[in-house]
Length: 71
Image (cartoon, rainbow, N blue to C red):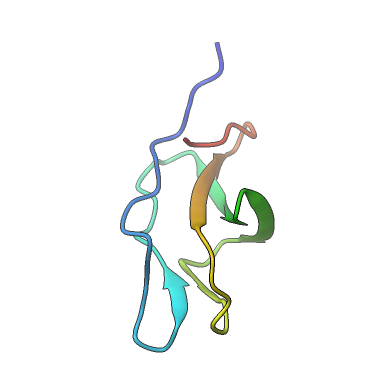
């Protein structure tokens, strides 16, 4: 059975318009995938992404070292 990494928490827009989130605490976390309107728009190891005023519904998922993706 694949493990499911813990969900990413604290996803929000900060004062300069960047999407930010809390750092993953899962020891097997490797990187994040960022989605807008259900489509992946970025992969990053950072805990922020400059979205330059692009409106939409965003989600951030954690990916672990085995390629499992959080909910």
